[in-house]
Image (cartoon, one colour):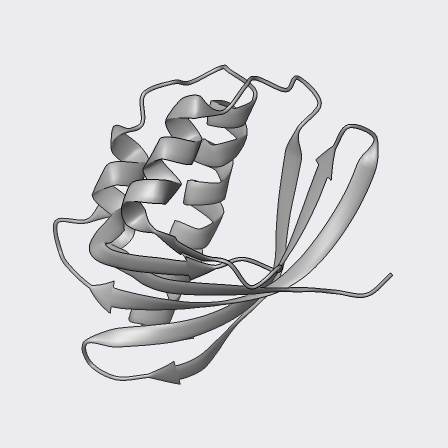
Length: 131
């Protein structure tokens, strides 16, 4: 992987580690996510809903703590890359309420030196992986 793809891969792992801390109630400081998501950030959920940066942040703030929430990230690979950005694909496994789900995600990152890990999230599309 190139240095930019490595930075984006590190960002995927670190932001999801933050989500675990936030969703379990251990860390309710959301500045990490605010710094990582571009103003035009758009997420498409596995159900096909479009979610803006504002909606993502509101969901974090309003989330109720779940002691048994876990996320595992695996199989990170670059799909395409330019000098300014990289498109990554990865597998995310979530465990909550006794259930495990998996999704394959594709995320677009822009190289921004002051951002966490040196990249900003611009787009995320998630698709369920069938059992």
